[in-house]
Length: 231
Figure 1 (cartoon, one colour):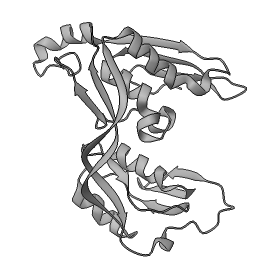
Figure 2 (cartoon, rainbow, N blue to C red; figure 1 turned 90 degrees about the vertical axis):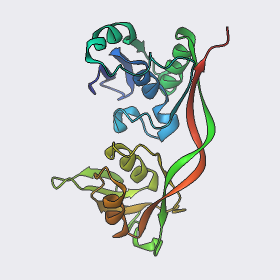
Figure 3 (cartoon, rainbow, N blue to C red; figure 1 turned 30 degrees about the horizontal axis):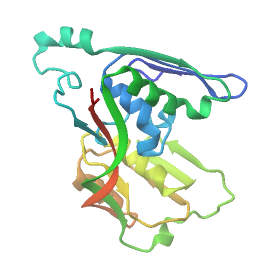
Figure 4 (cartoon, one colour; figure 1 turned 45 degrees about the vertical axis):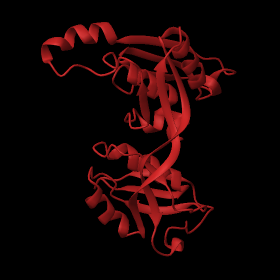
């Protein structure tokens, strides 16, 4: 399946396992996002598409190779210099380690070191402000699924709260602060919600209907730290 922005993922028609990941003409931040997506967000790139870079911290002397220039006249030369292509073929045995293998290759071939570390950063903490039983799944025997409805709402049935967190991060691209779970809800949930707002006030108005709210909080969370390699 092709996911745009130069990323395609092929799957074995029999097993359904990933057999090839191909990235074409992608900037470095996209490479790192693809490689570390699952470790940072708990969701496979197939589901989550390309995430934002709000879990990446650059600790490099020069960040100009990571961010495109504001001047349109310089864009072509920057793109030519800072676009990368990458392909990995996967066996049944290596498929489960696919993104770990990409991480290793990036650390091997690029002049940077990328690793996940805990850092205290500002987050938006999803919290429960009413009876948690409201969200608790009605029947755990029902199939687990996420359905995208025609009215732009999303229905979650018999899934963990992490699934909601993933979607909130993905659909609110203008909210640069990481959204994390602070609900302490351990049971699976049922909820139909409009998650696409891009501003905190509107999103919280929707979340309050279900006894949830996002509040700013400094937390130690997993961040991808990219630094210069020590020569």
